[in-house]
Each structure stands twice: as structure tokens, then as C-alpha cells.
Length: 227
Image (cartoon, rainbow, N blue to C red; front, side, top):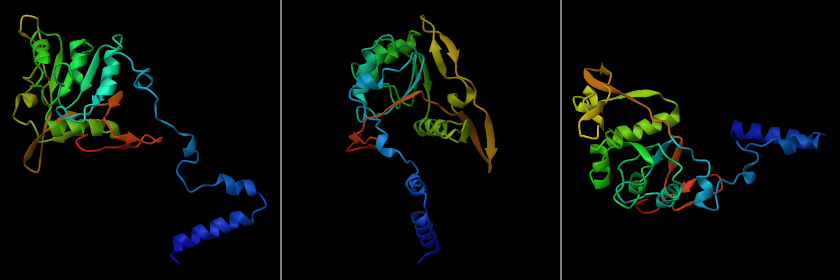
């Protein structure tokens, strides 16, 4: 019998012989002793976003028209008091669907995305200075979100080196007459192993919307098909 199994068996036997039976009941090998009391499932989308505040950073799942968390996005649209959102997503949705709804309702003040070519409403808002845009390569965007969740403030990547992202020549916001009001910040550059890398800062979200097939009481999500 492996030594680790033997040790567990001897420990359990010792507790069972103890006169203080409450000790055995209190000890558990599970990481969470009160798992049955946890229930992260909300009855309605309105209940899930009731604490959402203005000027928050929203991480939003979806790729094109696939895997878009429409239920939660639609609920935010019903609450026009939630404004000043910084939306972080692969794309900006389309007219009348997905994040396109929150763009039309003027609830989003800034988009951090890798592709925005399918939304004409967003294009007009950007060129008129009604919204700020931070274009980020798709892989970099994913890593910025992951790093934020892992507590990593920044990292270096070769993606976008030698482009306007690295040099700080990307227009973040325009004036109403179409002139550039604000440019992006130049990225710090370091050389590792003879190759140039630029520094990207992590993104820390206040809320995250994902589309899942189903979820359990602990908040574990299961995805299906293109979601």
C-alpha cells in the first residue's frame, strides 16, 4: 500500500478512536467544507447584473456572432443608468445585436477590441469622437485578460512590434470634425534573444459576460457547439 494512502488510513483510524467525536466530524479532506451551501445560479439576468456599476470594465465573450452573451447584454441595455462602460471583446458586435446594442444606447465609452469592421454604427461613433477605441491583436487581447486575472501587471510580446500600436500612432479618439484628439501611448520595447518585444499591460475586468450551455451551483460553466 502506498505510503500516502497508509498515512491517510492511520489518520482516519486515530480520529475514529478519539473520545472527542466532534473532531472527526470537523475534519475534511475537501478544499471546501460547505460546498452544498454554495449556489451561484441566479433566477434572472436582471438579478445577475443588479450590482453592476457605471464606469466599469466589462469583459465580453463572443467571436463574430457566435458565443455572444446576448441575454446579459440585453439586460444591460434595459438599464440606461449603467453608462461609461469600457467593453473588452474580440469585436464590437453588429448593428442591433450584441455589443452593438450598448453602442447605440451610448452606454459604452471605450472599446478594447481586435476587430471592429462589421459595425457601421461603431465606425461613425469613432470617427465623430463619440467613443474611444484601443485596437489590440487578438492573441494579445486574450493574454491581457488572462494576465489581469492571474495578477500579472504586464508582459512582453512580439505581436504588433513595428506597427502603429508599438509607435503610439494609433488614434484612440477623434474630435467631432474628424481630427485626432488623442493618440495611443508608445509601447516599451525590450530585446530578448535577439528579438524585439513590446510591453502590454494587463486588463482587469470588473465584470465578465460569457455564453454557456449550462452551469452548476459552484459557477462551473459547460460550453457547447460554437459557444
